[in-house]
Length: 196
Image (cartoon, rainbow, N blue to C red; front, side, top):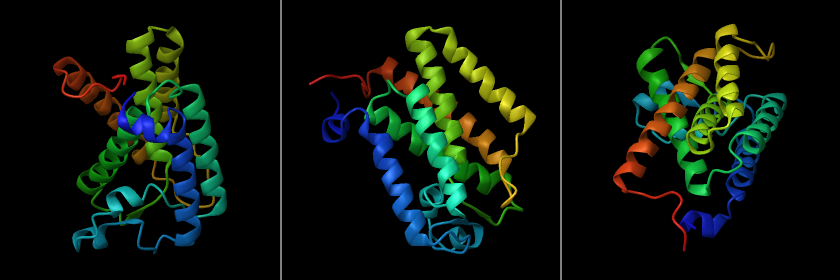
C-alpha cells in the first residue's frame, strides 16, 4: 500500500476532506470576503493558497451540506476503489485546474468558493479511471450522466449565484488527472497501486 494509504487508510481520504471542509467553512464564517475564498484581487497580490482553499469553504450552511452530501455520494458510488493517493491527487488536480481555468478564462469573475467543481472532477476522473480498470458499463453511464447534467445546466441553488462553468472545469480537470495518471503508470514514474 502507498505511504498515504498506510497513514490514512484507503477510505479515510474522503472522511478527512469532510472534516477539513466542515472545520474551515465554520471558521471562515460562510462569507465571500474571507481570506480563503478565490478572489482575483487577492490572488494578484500573491495569496496563492486561495487556489486550493477556495474549494474548502462555503457560502452558507445549506451550501456546505449539499456539497458534503454530494461528496459522500461520489465517494461511495464512483471513487470507492481509488487509493488514498489517487483520491487526494484527483482532488488537488481538480481544484487547481478549476482555479487556474477561472483565472485564465473568466476574467470578469471576482470570487469563487465551494467544493462543487471538485466534485465534478472526482466524478469524471473516478468514473473514467474505473472504466479503464474495470470495464464496467456503469462507469461509462456515470460519465454520460455527468455530461448530460452539465449540458442541461441544472441549477441547485437560489440562495447564491452558481458558477456553472466551474463544474465544466472540474469535469475536464478530472479527465486531465486521468491522462496524467495513465502517463505516470505507463512510465512507471509513480505506481498508485504499489503494495508494501
